[in-house]
Image 1 (cartoon, rainbow, N blue to C red):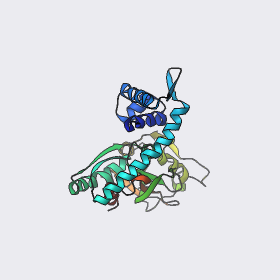
Image 2: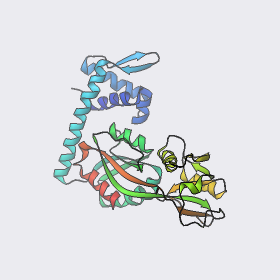
Image 3: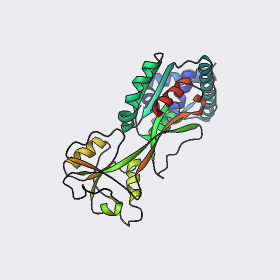
Image 4: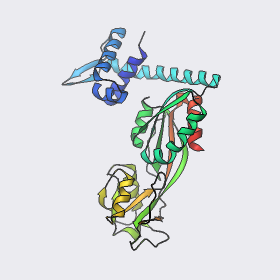
Length: 295
């Protein structure tokens, strides 16, 4: 009989490209993951990993087992969800991921209320970026993830995931109160062509959206400073080192030194979406968590 825990470890090796990375994602030691894969090899009687240089890759048998085993795990997950639905049980453990401003502005305020209402349910939360959330939920390492997508900047979601919009967020241009634009009722990209920006790093969804805002101006935003954290953006604007585009969700109070000016043409909006595998659609725990996030 194939060990399902060992199969999960093999799938993690396939998803992350190495035993060490798989161990880190699963919260195990590399030795424990190696032992589980070896146990799986003894159970199946075929080699599942092949050594290449200092690393390992899946063998042909390993790839076949990961693909077929994924379907088996999905069927078992769906069966478990249906059993819980028939029992009406909002119970068990859910692994959740969310991006930072959603943790502050959406998840934290509502998760405590949900757990108070359902004492047999436990939820563990891991903060990460949207593309990591898609990978973690898709590969079975998280059960529900909260991600975002800005305007027409795509967030690619695999077919076996369900995306549910739970909120819509808007970003404002944040300027120092002494900035010449602080008194404006509305700002367009053409008003901001000569401004220095505080932005998230290249390749992030928020940075992509900032670039899209400038479409049609013949210019790109002039990036002066980069930071992943919007709290740092506010600190840099407060120090008069640039302006920033900061979402309202989870935004810290601006205080007396900063002003939020709405943006237009286009309006910078993002959908906040919850992702889960289709095999967990019948889970009362997933349904309860989705309902809590939408309230």
